[in-house]
Length: 495
Image 1 (cartoon, rainbow, N blue to C red):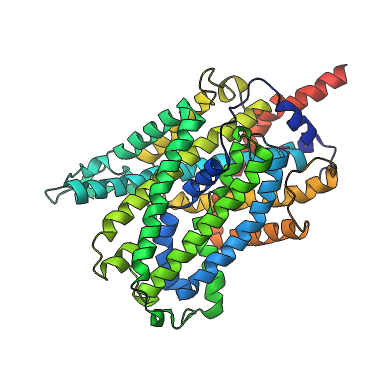
Image 2 (cartoon, rainbow, N blue to C red):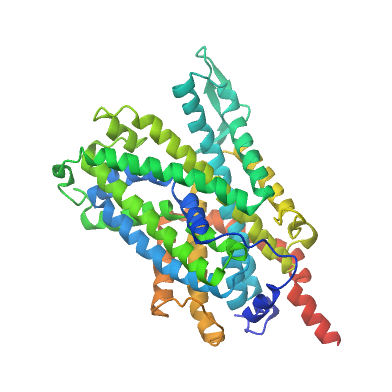
């Protein structure tokens, strides 16, 4: 093991990060606590709720999925408390990357930054790809408009034996190869324009999507509550899995919570980050947990878990009670949730790239460029939009979906550890919000989220390690030599 004095582990002191906040070329501080909560809810509530709930309830946990949601929320809660302390103490762009730089050193910071690039990029491509299918369904059901199937799917698919051509069924019943996913391109470009124009406009659009999505969920819960039969909650535990199903369900349902961490990437744009960031992070987690528990209780109360339709559980449960509006409502809710998720993912990624560019690990002239009028990282935002549009249009991303989960859990582990380490290395730094019961909270954040990573399977670990290996090549080929800390140390040596 290298000694702590190795250049690979040189830390960027938190005091230096705080000093850099006064630079003129910073992002606009326009986000209040409600906007931050909306960003977290928008990034979190989506297809994980609308689809994954039915799968886990039927196959793993039964009605005890309510407990699974609560346990997953506790695991997220430990990480959320750590995120809140770090974001209130070091309110600059970069999220887990910045916190790792201040506590664990440059190499670990690069690894987590490279991991976040994967998390947001793959997540946004996957969402854009999935958005297209629901949009096509809405056009057919509401307006009778049928898009050409060749323009609504990627030309490749991924099967157990590798990549195959993606064949779609045309209106005349014949088979043809898909061309590219046009709706995925169009929604990504529209979101990119909104993001370049400004954070206030982006947050306003996201808030509208979140209100629509939450309104749909509350409507579905309220409508379903009238049809709840308590007998459907018996037995409360899954007949085959018992209490083990509760634990298994927590790991499998965790994907529904991924997203609240994106709030921390916007610390530099919070009006009063020391107050607003803890409110935004913890508030978003509380809101989504209440929505999830309410939805799970209503779903399993309306329909016995053994009879759930896993493709569209909420819509099917309501339609079975004669509520025919359910399908349209669910489609609108999913579209709103996916649009919010896409917007927040594409909003967060450039902030991470911006932080890495400021530290010299990426080219500053491009990734650090701030628009003189809109005060947004416009070049990196456009680049992210182009990459996501191409990925959403052409790539078969289903096999990469779990990489989003493993990447986020990795970030949770790093941030949980960072709080404890910074308490030891810089105990006198002002902390507007202090996570309670450290090191217990930090340790539980590491253990619970680290443990959940091992439920995601060997293949996802291999893919993550391959991606991180590519990142190490970039680091040793470019970033290490161009690091701002490296230039500072060389200048001090010459002086």
